[in-house]
Image 1 (spheres, rainbow, N blue to C red):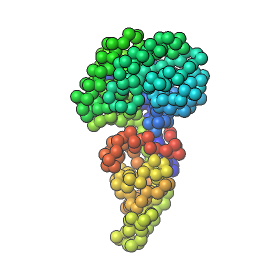
Image 2: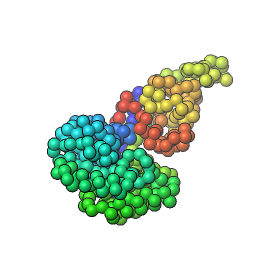
Image 3: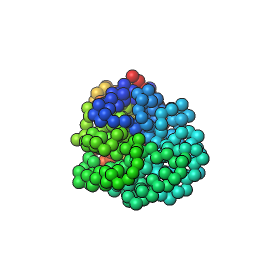
Image 4: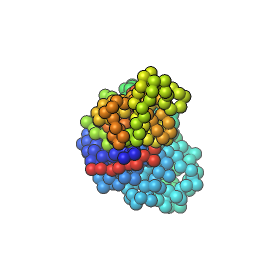
Length: 350
């Protein structure tokens, strides 16, 4: 088998339907970072058939990959694009984010281009930060027939950890909606955490990302979602070590007794990072520990006599979840899946 990710598209559709039932709002499905490592083109094909209102990506390059794959669903680019790429955006029917007044003043589209206005309600990343700025932006748009302001949105910093800051951001956004004179087709604030935890009657769309892939944005936020990704490899060689022999670079691991080692063809070049050394792998429902340093293409585990060449190795799955891996290495589930490299084959099942 070598190594591959198995992506369950039935679970993807189930998760989407769970979100729809919970929110009853338009879905702007986030497929940036190669659909969080799940494969943007195949994921987008499914989401398109399920008639999501929009897809969202971070880079124009990501949007172009989808258009090249004949994805017709509207695509929102969440991050800045260079004004020189406006023609490319027009050619591919892409919706852009207004993230600053300076950028808005620089773009000169020759045809109508759809825009969503990003409001900075406190994260201090992208977006217009004051009501005066936003009113000026809308004035510019109203005076240019080629600028079509379709939506307005923001992003919350602390939905899962700090209610006070969430309410501060939310209230500022609501204040802006009340003070500006514009009829938006899309009003969206909630990514996965907020759409699960908060009920917002002033929006009509949500931006699920992580939740689509069956992962929790926080331990206490759950919609009974199903993870859609598993990762497997196989044992390609068994080594019988004598006491005192070592494994891998360093050497960090030296056998304290005669020991059996299984070699597995996956490493940090595949996104299985060196800091995952304390994350076990699963063979025949039993956990085995990694020994020695994880290499670019290989890792080694200490095994018993039951493990044979060709045995399937579970790295992500029902016996070792993405959340467990993230907790063990002190990171977030987003990082674990987005690190999975494209040289890992994606197999899509239903």
